Image 1 (tube, rainbow, N blue to C red):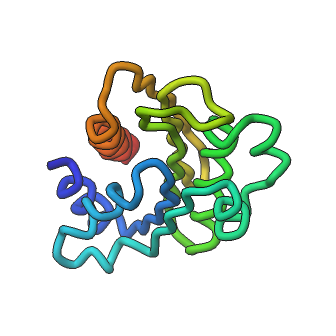
Image 2: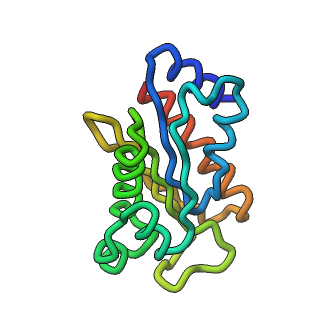
Length: 153
């Protein structure tokens, strides 16, 4: 799996990572933690599902949540940057989305936004989850994140 590949790259490069997860509920962190010695690379992880917790735990601006909705590129970006800084990690990953089947009051479709922050760049991505079940949406997002992280490193 690509988490093992990422783990090896992080160790070889002396990098650390932290995750701010919402829609994925800890799944992305779990995939990396399965690798023995993961404490060498994982600084920490926060699951912040509600808007209130995104603000309290991850310091995501309420104004940004209100202006752009909780499922947005802007919120994912703040999540990634803030978790990176809070955990003193080399890389921060922010994930916010709606896996369905129902839609949240401030979102209109099943989608996810992922942001990956390093010391030099923040990359953001959008995935349309329209045809996937809830579990498949989470799995697809997890796979996508590991593929992107491996490409970036």
